Image (cartoon, rainbow, N blue to C red; front, side, top):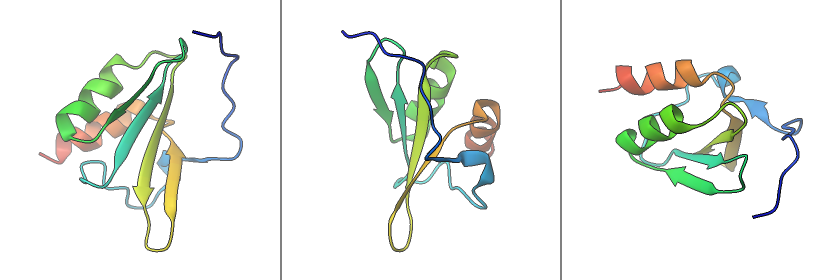
Length: 90
């Protein structure tokens, strides 16, 4: 695996700015780009919880949410809040 430099997310919005992001939604996918180059995704609530729990501080976690007219991709900037939203959804 190649080594990656620190990630920059200048072109992406923070998930904490999304008004009503349905974290538990079936069409919402979490994507983790690990500092080691490994990419993983989570679609179900248990998978999303696990991904958030396992992601390291140097990993990039994104959330993809299909909007009405286009796909929105956000940086998960507050993982604790995302995890809490998943816990509250069940």
